[in-house]
Amino acid sequence: MSSAIMAAMKQIADEKGIKVETVLDAIEQALAAAFRKDFGTKNQNIVVNFDAETGGMKVWDIKTIVPDADLEEIQRLDEEEARLRDEALGRGEEPPAEDPNRPRFNPKTEIMITEAKKLQGGVSIGDELKLPLEITTDFGRMAAMTAKQVITQKLREAERLMIYEEYKDKVGEILMGTVQRREGRNFLIDFGRFSVILPPEEQIIGEFLRPGARVKVFVVSCNLGNRGPEVVVSRAHPNMVRTVFEQEIPEVQNGTVQIKAVAREGGSRSKVAVFTTEEGVDPIGACIGQRGTRIQTVIAELGGEKIDIILWNEDPKQFITNALSPAHVVAIELNEEQKVALVTVPADQFSLAIGKGGQNVRLAAKLTGWTITVQQAEGVEVSEPEAIEPTEESAE
Image (cartoon, rainbow, N blue to C red; front, side, top):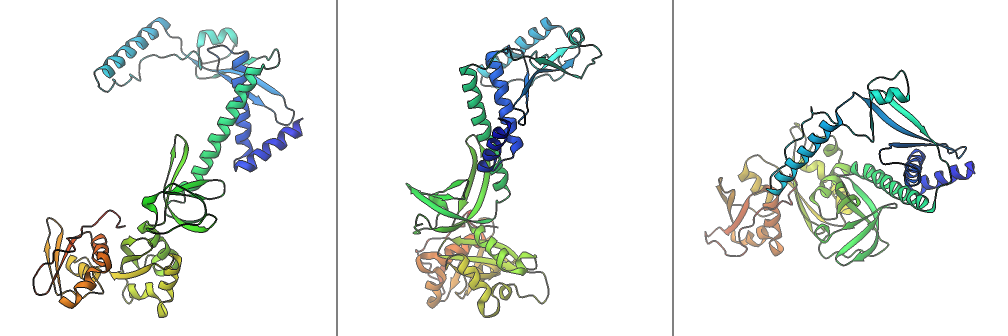
Protein backbone atom coordinates (compact mmCIF):
# COMPACT_ATOMS: atom_id res chain seq x y z
CA MET A 1 0.00 0.00 0.00
CA SER A 2 2.76 2.44 0.96
CA SER A 3 4.68 1.93 -2.31
CA ALA A 4 1.46 2.47 -4.24
CA ILE A 5 0.80 5.72 -2.37
CA MET A 6 4.34 7.00 -3.01
CA ALA A 7 4.15 6.06 -6.69
CA ALA A 8 0.82 7.87 -7.05
CA MET A 9 2.20 10.97 -5.28
CA LYS A 10 5.25 11.06 -7.54
CA GLN A 11 3.10 10.62 -10.65
CA ILE A 12 0.83 13.52 -9.64
CA ALA A 13 3.85 15.70 -8.87
CA ASP A 14 5.42 14.96 -12.28
CA GLU A 15 2.19 15.58 -14.20
CA LYS A 16 1.54 18.93 -12.54
CA GLY A 17 5.14 20.09 -12.30
CA ILE A 18 5.05 20.44 -8.52
CA LYS A 19 7.05 18.94 -5.65
CA VAL A 20 6.17 15.66 -3.94
CA GLU A 21 6.21 17.59 -0.64
CA THR A 22 3.42 19.79 -2.02
CA VAL A 23 1.31 16.72 -2.79
CA LEU A 24 1.97 15.37 0.72
CA ASP A 25 0.92 18.70 2.24
CA ALA A 26 -2.34 18.59 0.22
CA ILE A 27 -3.04 15.05 1.49
CA GLU A 28 -2.42 16.09 5.11
CA GLN A 29 -4.76 19.07 4.78
CA ALA A 30 -7.38 16.83 3.16
CA LEU A 31 -7.13 14.30 6.00
CA ALA A 32 -7.46 17.13 8.53
CA ALA A 33 -10.64 18.28 6.76
CA ALA A 34 -12.00 14.71 6.76
CA PHE A 35 -11.24 14.28 10.48
CA ARG A 36 -12.93 17.59 11.24
CA LYS A 37 -15.99 16.43 9.27
CA ASP A 38 -16.45 13.15 11.15
CA PHE A 39 -14.79 13.58 14.55
CA GLY A 40 -13.81 17.21 15.08
CA THR A 41 -15.35 19.98 17.14
CA LYS A 42 -15.75 23.69 16.43
CA ASN A 43 -12.71 24.99 18.31
CA GLN A 44 -10.15 22.36 17.31
CA ASN A 45 -7.09 23.38 15.28
CA ILE A 46 -6.51 20.02 13.62
CA VAL A 47 -3.12 19.11 12.15
CA VAL A 48 -2.38 15.74 10.55
CA ASN A 49 0.95 14.03 9.97
CA PHE A 50 0.72 11.43 7.19
CA ASP A 51 3.47 8.85 6.72
CA ALA A 52 3.53 8.00 3.01
CA GLU A 53 5.86 5.04 3.66
CA THR A 54 3.58 3.21 6.12
CA GLY A 55 0.24 4.77 5.17
CA GLY A 56 -0.34 5.71 8.83
CA MET A 57 -1.43 9.05 10.23
CA LYS A 58 -1.31 10.97 13.51
CA VAL A 59 -3.71 13.76 14.47
CA TRP A 60 -3.27 16.64 16.92
CA ASP A 61 -5.16 19.65 18.16
CA ILE A 62 -2.44 22.33 18.24
CA LYS A 63 -2.79 25.57 20.19
CA THR A 64 -0.54 28.43 21.25
CA ILE A 65 -0.44 29.18 24.97
CA VAL A 66 -1.45 32.77 25.82
CA PRO A 67 -1.94 34.74 29.09
CA ASP A 68 -5.22 34.44 30.94
CA ALA A 69 -7.84 37.00 29.86
CA ASP A 70 -11.37 38.09 30.75
CA LEU A 71 -13.54 36.41 28.11
CA GLU A 72 -16.58 38.57 28.92
CA GLU A 73 -14.56 41.76 28.42
CA ILE A 74 -13.11 40.43 25.15
CA GLN A 75 -16.61 39.58 23.90
CA ARG A 76 -17.84 43.08 24.82
CA LEU A 77 -14.94 44.68 22.94
CA ASP A 78 -15.57 42.41 19.92
CA GLU A 79 -19.23 43.43 19.82
CA GLU A 80 -18.36 47.14 20.17
CA GLU A 81 -15.79 46.89 17.38
CA ALA A 82 -18.31 45.14 15.11
CA ARG A 83 -20.96 47.78 15.87
CA LEU A 84 -18.63 50.67 15.00
CA ARG A 85 -17.56 48.93 11.80
CA ASP A 86 -21.17 48.31 10.70
CA GLU A 87 -22.16 51.92 11.46
CA ALA A 88 -19.22 53.27 9.44
CA LEU A 89 -20.05 51.02 6.49
CA GLY A 90 -23.69 52.07 6.72
CA ARG A 91 -22.61 55.71 6.34
CA GLY A 92 -20.40 54.78 3.39
CA GLU A 93 -17.23 55.50 5.40
CA GLU A 94 -14.05 53.54 5.97
CA PRO A 95 -14.39 51.38 9.13
CA PRO A 96 -12.17 52.45 12.04
CA ALA A 97 -8.84 50.69 12.35
CA GLU A 98 -8.66 47.83 14.82
CA ASP A 99 -6.89 48.53 18.11
CA PRO A 100 -3.81 46.28 18.05
CA ASN A 101 -3.29 46.65 21.80
CA ARG A 102 -6.69 45.50 23.03
CA PRO A 103 -6.96 41.93 24.40
CA ARG A 104 -8.09 39.25 21.95
CA PHE A 105 -8.58 35.50 22.14
CA ASN A 106 -9.09 32.90 19.41
CA PRO A 107 -10.30 29.65 21.02
CA LYS A 108 -9.49 27.67 17.87
CA THR A 109 -5.76 28.40 17.82
CA GLU A 110 -5.09 29.61 21.39
CA ILE A 111 -5.42 28.30 24.92
CA MET A 112 -5.02 30.25 28.17
CA ILE A 113 -2.11 29.36 30.45
CA THR A 114 -4.27 28.18 33.36
CA GLU A 115 -6.22 25.74 31.17
CA ALA A 116 -3.02 24.56 29.46
CA LYS A 117 -1.39 23.67 32.79
CA LYS A 118 -4.38 21.47 33.63
CA LEU A 119 -3.73 19.46 30.48
CA GLN A 120 0.07 19.37 30.55
CA GLY A 121 2.55 20.44 33.17
CA GLY A 122 5.72 22.48 32.64
CA VAL A 123 4.30 24.75 29.96
CA SER A 124 4.69 28.51 29.63
CA ILE A 125 3.23 31.38 27.62
CA GLY A 126 4.21 31.22 23.94
CA ASP A 127 4.68 27.44 23.91
CA GLU A 128 2.83 25.24 21.45
CA LEU A 129 0.52 22.67 23.05
CA LYS A 130 -0.03 19.49 21.01
CA LEU A 131 -3.02 17.46 22.13
CA PRO A 132 -3.20 14.03 20.43
CA LEU A 133 -6.55 12.99 18.97
CA GLU A 134 -7.78 9.49 18.17
CA ILE A 135 -9.52 8.14 15.07
CA THR A 136 -12.11 5.78 16.47
CA THR A 137 -13.57 4.48 13.18
CA ASP A 138 -13.01 4.73 9.43
CA PHE A 139 -13.94 7.97 7.69
CA GLY A 140 -17.48 8.17 6.35
CA ARG A 141 -18.53 8.82 2.76
CA MET A 142 -19.04 12.57 3.30
CA ALA A 143 -15.63 12.91 4.94
CA ALA A 144 -14.02 11.08 2.01
CA MET A 145 -15.73 13.42 -0.46
CA THR A 146 -14.52 16.41 1.57
CA ALA A 147 -10.97 15.06 1.48
CA LYS A 148 -11.15 14.57 -2.29
CA GLN A 149 -12.35 18.15 -2.80
CA VAL A 150 -9.59 19.53 -0.59
CA ILE A 151 -6.88 17.57 -2.43
CA THR A 152 -8.18 18.71 -5.81
CA GLN A 153 -8.32 22.34 -4.67
CA LYS A 154 -4.88 22.34 -3.02
CA LEU A 155 -3.20 20.68 -6.00
CA ARG A 156 -4.85 23.15 -8.38
CA GLU A 157 -3.65 26.06 -6.22
CA ALA A 158 -0.13 24.61 -6.05
CA GLU A 159 -0.02 24.14 -9.84
CA ARG A 160 -1.22 27.71 -10.41
CA LEU A 161 1.35 29.09 -7.98
CA MET A 162 4.12 27.07 -9.66
CA ILE A 163 3.11 28.43 -13.08
CA TYR A 164 2.97 31.97 -11.70
CA GLU A 165 6.44 31.64 -10.12
CA GLU A 166 7.77 30.37 -13.46
CA TYR A 167 6.25 33.05 -15.69
CA LYS A 168 6.62 36.10 -13.44
CA ASP A 169 10.37 35.88 -14.12
CA LYS A 170 9.73 35.76 -17.88
CA VAL A 171 8.08 39.20 -18.10
CA GLY A 172 9.98 41.15 -20.75
CA GLU A 173 11.14 37.98 -22.52
CA ILE A 174 10.16 36.50 -25.89
CA LEU A 175 8.80 32.96 -25.71
CA MET A 176 7.94 30.41 -28.36
CA GLY A 177 4.44 28.95 -28.20
CA THR A 178 2.04 26.93 -30.33
CA VAL A 179 -1.21 28.32 -31.68
CA GLN A 180 -4.00 26.11 -30.31
CA ARG A 181 -7.08 27.67 -31.85
CA ARG A 182 -8.97 30.88 -32.42
CA GLU A 183 -11.76 31.87 -30.03
CA GLY A 184 -13.69 34.84 -31.43
CA ARG A 185 -11.07 37.54 -31.95
CA ASN A 186 -8.61 35.91 -29.54
CA PHE A 187 -5.91 33.35 -30.26
CA LEU A 188 -5.06 30.70 -27.67
CA ILE A 189 -1.29 30.15 -27.37
CA ASP A 190 -0.07 26.93 -25.72
CA PHE A 191 3.15 26.76 -23.68
CA GLY A 192 2.87 23.08 -22.75
CA ARG A 193 1.42 23.01 -19.21
CA PHE A 194 -0.21 26.40 -19.61
CA SER A 195 -2.13 28.35 -22.24
CA VAL A 196 -2.57 32.10 -22.60
CA ILE A 197 -4.84 34.33 -24.65
CA LEU A 198 -3.42 36.68 -27.27
CA PRO A 199 -6.06 39.46 -27.29
CA PRO A 200 -6.92 41.51 -30.41
CA GLU A 201 -5.17 44.66 -29.15
CA GLU A 202 -1.89 42.74 -28.84
CA GLN A 203 -2.09 41.12 -32.29
CA ILE A 204 -0.40 42.31 -35.47
CA ILE A 205 -3.05 43.88 -37.68
CA GLY A 206 -4.01 41.60 -40.55
CA GLU A 207 -2.01 38.62 -39.27
CA PHE A 208 -3.76 35.25 -39.09
CA LEU A 209 -2.15 32.60 -36.90
CA ARG A 210 -2.73 29.08 -38.21
CA PRO A 211 -3.54 26.44 -35.53
CA GLY A 212 -0.45 24.33 -34.87
CA ALA A 213 1.93 27.08 -35.99
CA ARG A 214 4.89 28.00 -33.77
CA VAL A 215 4.92 31.72 -32.92
CA LYS A 216 7.00 34.08 -30.82
CA VAL A 217 5.22 36.26 -28.28
CA PHE A 218 6.39 38.93 -25.87
CA VAL A 219 5.41 38.46 -22.20
CA VAL A 220 3.93 41.80 -21.13
CA SER A 221 2.83 40.97 -17.58
CA CYS A 222 2.07 38.14 -15.16
CA ASN A 223 -0.27 38.49 -12.19
CA LEU A 224 -1.84 35.98 -9.82
CA GLY A 225 -5.61 36.40 -10.01
CA ASN A 226 -8.51 34.56 -8.42
CA ARG A 227 -8.55 32.02 -11.23
CA GLY A 228 -4.80 31.52 -11.29
CA PRO A 229 -1.95 33.18 -13.19
CA GLU A 230 -3.02 35.89 -15.64
CA VAL A 231 -0.30 36.18 -18.30
CA VAL A 232 -0.62 38.86 -20.98
CA VAL A 233 1.36 38.23 -24.19
CA SER A 234 1.77 40.35 -27.29
CA ARG A 235 2.91 40.15 -30.88
CA ALA A 236 2.75 43.93 -31.40
CA HIS A 237 4.32 45.39 -28.25
CA PRO A 238 7.18 47.90 -28.86
CA ASN A 239 9.34 46.17 -26.26
CA MET A 240 9.37 43.05 -28.42
CA VAL A 241 11.60 45.04 -30.79
CA ARG A 242 13.75 46.22 -27.88
CA THR A 243 14.18 42.64 -26.62
CA VAL A 244 15.24 41.34 -30.04
CA PHE A 245 17.83 44.15 -30.30
CA GLU A 246 19.19 43.16 -26.87
CA GLN A 247 19.42 39.52 -27.94
CA GLU A 248 21.04 40.08 -31.33
CA ILE A 249 23.27 43.15 -30.87
CA PRO A 250 26.10 42.82 -28.31
CA GLU A 251 26.55 46.60 -27.93
CA VAL A 252 22.90 46.94 -26.89
CA GLN A 253 23.15 43.97 -24.56
CA ASN A 254 26.20 45.32 -22.70
CA GLY A 255 24.87 48.90 -22.55
CA THR A 256 27.37 50.50 -24.93
CA VAL A 257 24.47 51.45 -27.20
CA GLN A 258 21.28 52.58 -25.44
CA ILE A 259 17.79 52.23 -26.90
CA LYS A 260 16.10 55.48 -25.89
CA ALA A 261 12.67 54.87 -27.44
CA VAL A 262 10.78 52.48 -29.69
CA ALA A 263 7.71 53.22 -31.82
CA ARG A 264 6.07 50.29 -33.53
CA GLU A 265 3.23 49.32 -35.80
CA GLY A 266 3.51 45.56 -35.42
CA GLY A 267 4.18 43.57 -38.55
CA SER A 268 4.71 46.68 -40.67
CA ARG A 269 7.36 49.11 -39.45
CA SER A 270 9.25 50.27 -36.36
CA LYS A 271 11.45 53.23 -35.52
CA VAL A 272 14.16 52.74 -32.90
CA ALA A 273 16.03 55.68 -31.33
CA VAL A 274 19.58 54.76 -30.27
CA PHE A 275 22.34 56.67 -28.47
CA THR A 276 25.78 56.14 -27.01
CA THR A 277 28.15 58.04 -24.72
CA GLU A 278 31.15 55.97 -25.84
CA GLU A 279 33.61 57.79 -28.08
CA GLY A 280 34.36 56.08 -31.36
CA VAL A 281 31.15 54.04 -31.33
CA ASP A 282 28.60 54.56 -34.10
CA PRO A 283 25.27 53.46 -32.51
CA ILE A 284 23.45 53.21 -35.83
CA GLY A 285 26.30 51.30 -37.47
CA ALA A 286 26.50 48.93 -34.49
CA CYS A 287 22.83 48.08 -34.91
CA ILE A 288 23.02 47.66 -38.67
CA GLY A 289 26.24 45.61 -38.70
CA GLN A 290 28.56 44.84 -41.57
CA ARG A 291 26.58 44.83 -44.82
CA GLY A 292 23.40 44.97 -42.73
CA THR A 293 23.84 41.50 -41.25
CA ARG A 294 22.71 42.45 -37.73
CA ILE A 295 19.63 44.41 -38.72
CA GLN A 296 18.66 41.66 -41.17
CA THR A 297 18.74 39.16 -38.29
CA VAL A 298 16.49 41.46 -36.26
CA ILE A 299 14.11 41.88 -39.21
CA ALA A 300 13.98 38.09 -39.68
CA GLU A 301 13.18 37.61 -35.97
CA LEU A 302 10.28 40.06 -36.34
CA GLY A 303 8.88 38.34 -39.40
CA GLY A 304 10.14 40.78 -42.04
CA GLU A 305 9.05 43.97 -40.25
CA LYS A 306 10.86 47.07 -41.52
CA ILE A 307 13.16 48.80 -39.01
CA ASP A 308 14.34 52.43 -39.07
CA ILE A 309 17.33 53.16 -36.83
CA ILE A 310 17.22 56.78 -35.60
CA LEU A 311 19.91 58.70 -33.73
CA TRP A 312 18.48 60.04 -30.48
CA ASN A 313 19.23 63.65 -29.56
CA GLU A 314 18.31 65.59 -26.42
CA ASP A 315 17.52 68.61 -28.64
CA PRO A 316 13.83 68.13 -29.62
CA LYS A 317 14.31 69.84 -32.99
CA GLN A 318 17.15 67.55 -33.97
CA PHE A 319 15.39 64.47 -32.61
CA ILE A 320 12.19 65.24 -34.55
CA THR A 321 14.27 65.89 -37.68
CA ASN A 322 15.97 62.50 -37.27
CA ALA A 323 12.65 60.76 -36.51
CA LEU A 324 11.07 62.00 -39.79
CA SER A 325 13.90 60.38 -41.76
CA PRO A 326 14.20 59.65 -44.66
CA ALA A 327 12.41 62.96 -45.39
CA HIS A 328 14.48 66.17 -45.37
CA VAL A 329 13.28 68.84 -42.91
CA VAL A 330 13.61 72.56 -43.76
CA ALA A 331 12.45 74.09 -40.49
CA ILE A 332 10.74 73.24 -37.19
CA GLU A 333 8.69 75.47 -34.88
CA LEU A 334 8.09 74.15 -31.37
CA ASN A 335 5.37 74.92 -28.84
CA GLU A 336 7.13 73.78 -25.66
CA GLU A 337 4.05 74.07 -23.42
CA GLN A 338 1.80 71.89 -25.56
CA LYS A 339 4.65 69.79 -27.03
CA VAL A 340 3.49 70.55 -30.57
CA ALA A 341 5.91 70.70 -33.51
CA LEU A 342 5.17 72.40 -36.84
CA VAL A 343 7.55 70.84 -39.36
CA THR A 344 8.27 72.32 -42.81
CA VAL A 345 9.53 70.06 -45.59
CA PRO A 346 10.21 70.64 -49.30
CA ALA A 347 7.18 70.08 -51.53
CA ASP A 348 8.75 67.02 -53.15
CA GLN A 349 9.45 65.55 -49.69
CA PHE A 350 5.96 66.03 -48.28
CA SER A 351 4.65 62.55 -49.19
CA LEU A 352 7.87 60.98 -47.93
CA ALA A 353 7.56 62.80 -44.58
CA ILE A 354 3.96 61.71 -44.17
CA GLY A 355 4.55 58.16 -45.35
CA LYS A 356 2.08 55.64 -46.69
CA GLY A 357 -1.17 56.11 -44.84
CA GLY A 358 0.57 58.67 -42.58
CA GLN A 359 2.77 55.95 -41.07
CA ASN A 360 6.10 57.80 -41.09
CA VAL A 361 4.86 60.90 -39.26
CA ARG A 362 2.71 58.77 -36.97
CA LEU A 363 5.70 56.68 -35.87
CA ALA A 364 7.82 59.83 -35.49
CA ALA A 365 5.19 61.28 -33.13
CA LYS A 366 5.16 58.10 -31.06
CA LEU A 367 8.95 57.99 -30.97
CA THR A 368 9.53 61.60 -29.90
CA GLY A 369 6.47 62.18 -27.74
CA TRP A 370 5.59 65.35 -29.69
CA THR A 371 2.45 66.14 -31.68
CA ILE A 372 3.73 66.69 -35.22
CA THR A 373 2.09 68.70 -38.02
CA VAL A 374 3.79 68.67 -41.43
CA GLN A 375 3.53 71.49 -43.99
CA GLN A 376 5.12 72.16 -47.37
CA ALA A 377 7.97 74.62 -47.76
CA GLU A 378 5.72 77.13 -49.56
CA GLY A 379 4.21 77.79 -46.14
CA VAL A 380 0.75 76.46 -46.95
CA GLU A 381 -0.30 74.11 -44.19
CA VAL A 382 -2.05 71.06 -45.55
CA SER A 383 -5.22 69.85 -43.92
CA GLU A 384 -4.42 66.17 -44.28
CA PRO A 385 -3.02 64.44 -42.47
CA GLU A 386 -4.02 66.21 -39.27
CA ALA A 387 -1.55 66.78 -36.49
CA ILE A 388 -0.25 63.41 -35.35
CA GLU A 389 -0.21 62.98 -31.58
CA PRO A 390 2.06 60.60 -29.68
CA THR A 391 0.52 57.56 -28.03
CA GLU A 392 1.39 55.32 -25.10
CA GLU A 393 2.69 52.67 -27.51
CA SER A 394 6.08 54.39 -27.54
CA ALA A 395 8.42 52.41 -25.29
CA GLU A 396 10.53 55.01 -23.57
